[in-house]
Length: 130
Image (cartoon, rainbow, N blue to C red; front, side):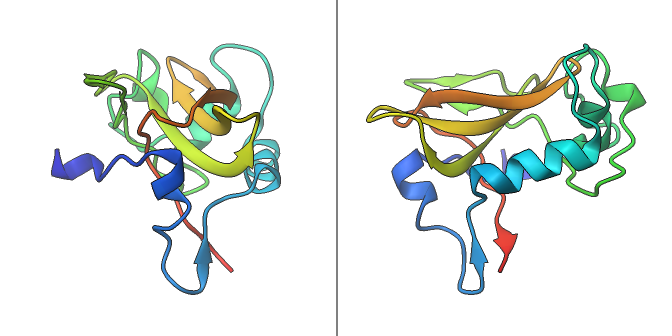
């Protein structure tokens, strides 16, 4: 759906940011989560701060503040078929976990945090200005 943008494999995500921009590093996402109020509670403050208002991103989306202007939308994922559209948001980082997995930022159902996911899956990309 046009509203959510494209989903990319990890390999393709490494090449999509325009000149002067880069795919977030693990440090970029870690700093963003700290700034947004990361903790291990559900719902956590980072979820509210990173989620677009009225996004429909999980059961707690009505309370989203988007105070960071990150504006996460629930674009879901693709692995063999589209999954979690309207429920979860995943954003690739540059950091590999191992040969088949990489780190990504995950948002959904009151949670915002880092996870490892298969590089052959397709997720959203958010570029960071250099």
